[in-house]
Length: 235
Image 1 (tube, helix red, strand yellow):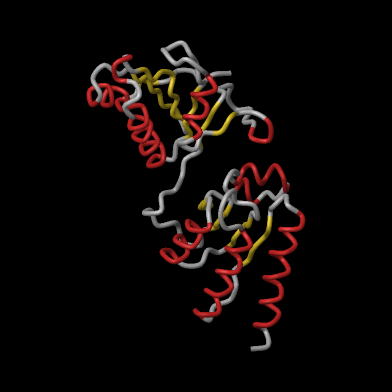
Image 2 (tube, one colour):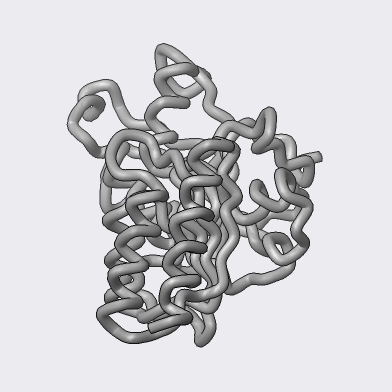
């Protein structure tokens, strides 16, 4: 069921003024920001204006902790729904199907809010390293209720974001590791870096779990951290 009683959003009006000729229909209710239409005149397409508009929308949603909902369509001038899906995925949108299915709405894509790296997390924050999943997705896989009820998760998608987050904000209270992080360094590299960090700072390794669905990678991370913790007990 689509959300009812949605209120027209001032951000849409602002963007239409900022980018003359564009049409941006946004509605906000509770924890959702619904994008029902984004359209540009033919002569303005292919100039990156759509990306700039989406960046503004995502920035606003992140600042307010809102989930963005939309359903890609060719009704407003686009030539391919698949191209639109690829476009929105660049901004962190997920297709509403399979393991990512959210039954609270019927839109075909959604984007969960992100905590920016410039925003200091709450005291005792929890850190999730995963290039695809959000805490609620890990909850569906593991059944661990902590992923669902704790609202203090900070999500990072890569080794570089993992390192930056900890160097800037200190050790989290808990960490949840994925192993496979797409192209580049893996969750194992994150674990190795964190072991070095704890040794240099003379601090204990934080509480952790490994939610990776890669059984070999998962065991490698657990074995590496366990070996470090066992060794550090005797130092």
